[in-house]
Length: 244
Image (cartoon, rainbow, N blue to C red; front, top):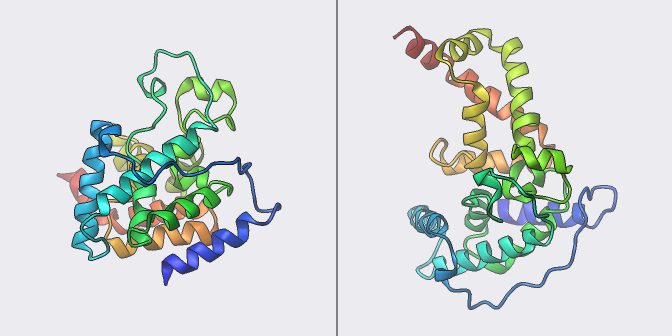
C-alpha cells in the first residue's frame, strides 16, 4: 500500500511544472544484464546487507541482488549526467559516487524488489526538491549547486537540515544540547549519519518507511522534526550517559 501511495504521489507531482524543482533530463535504463563486478567493494557489501535485510523482512526473493545491482548502477549513470567535474584534493570529490546509496536501497525494499518500479520512481522523484534532502547522492557533484559549495565538499543536508536541527535543539531540548556540547560531539554529526543511512540500524523498518513517507508527503522540513523527536525520545538516556 505504501509503495503504491508514494508512487502515485510522486508521479502526480513530477508531472506538474510548479512542483518540479530540478530538470528531468533524459535517461534510458542500461541493459538488464548489469554485472555485480562493476560495483565497488563498498557497494557490494551494501548490496549484501540490503538483500539480507530484505529477506529477513520477507520483502525480497532469491535473485534480488541482481535487481539491486541493476538499480544502483543505473542510478549512478543517471546522476552522472547531472554532475560536474571539480578539481579538488578532497577524497569525497574524487569519485562520481557518494558511497553506498541507502535511499535507493530503501525504495528497492519498499517496492518489494521490483527494479523497474524502483528506477522509474527514483527518476520521477529526482525532479522534486525533497530528493535533495532524502536522497543524498542526488546532489553529489551536482550541477545544481554553486561551484564554491561543491569545492567545500559539504552536502546541503549538513548546512541546511543539520544547522536547523541544532538551532531547534537549543530552543526545544536545552539539556540535550548541553550534553552534546560537553561531550565534544555535535548533534549535526549524528544526524548526518542517521539521514545518510535513512535511519538504517537505528529504527525498525516500519519507522524507516514512515520517515521516508512523511518527508515525501509533508516536505523536507519534516526531516528536521523527525531528528528532534528522536532526540526528545532519547533525552533521558542521553542525560544518564552524560552523568555517567
